[in-house]
Image (cartoon, rainbow, N blue to C red; front, side):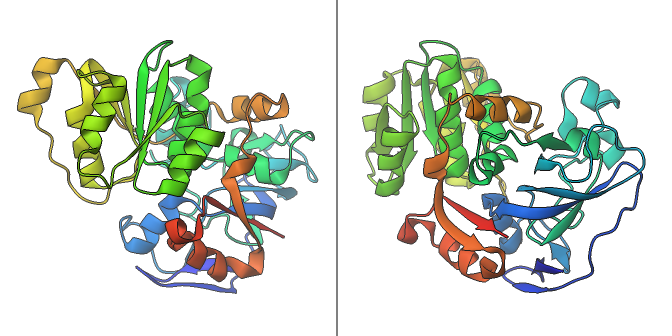
Length: 349
């Protein structure tokens, strides 16, 4: 089969590799019908995820058709159309039982396996471990391009941004970073009824998209040196109840310390590859809660249900469409997202 192969920082190629095989009785092999590129993949290519090795198939999001099943898989059958969870989970270990499936012990304590520790979804076929709970049946009423957003980003924005940030009705929420995951946090924040949702970014197009299509009530351009003053004029001089960081660089996380309200929450969603300054001497007296985390994907089926019921619209995320053999072009577009007004690259068989 053909797949997108990581060859070290800054190096990738669409090339021929062996077809995946069933290794464990809980595995499935899925034909990839639709996949996409995540910001985490760019972090891998930058070298921010050093455990990723030369020869790895990148990617952890996808929709496909089951072509082979291990003998222990009971909830799916060959021919089923499924959404591939970015997290592989057993559902029975200590961590899965308490909802922390990203630390599934059956996966060695790190269930982000696909495109990280094992070959991923930017390929014609993929082996998915623990298939019973790590594949979600795709509702017939939604498209592949909608369903693939439930592999990762919708649940990431919701679980790590909105739930971890303890967003409650009438609160003020600031999302720093209007990329796909930040936009997903804004979109899903509506499930908790905040009074204000402020998008912060340097990209004027993304800010416009955030307000017109993803539920942001206000937008602040952080290219302006006075952006924090503008923000505080919106949320109040004491700061925002919840600040969600969805970029993954020190400057954006460190800005959160200045704009969170006493008693508020800072929810880190971004993938960081460098240390940040934590002014604990200031924050401890403000009763600020700081949360971090990998998505657990326990809300993946719920997101599919919401899309199927027409309660959320994720179609604006699908800004660019390609065929699988155009991965190199798709990466070029996504790597210059602001220039190309790109959100998600959707690639189909």
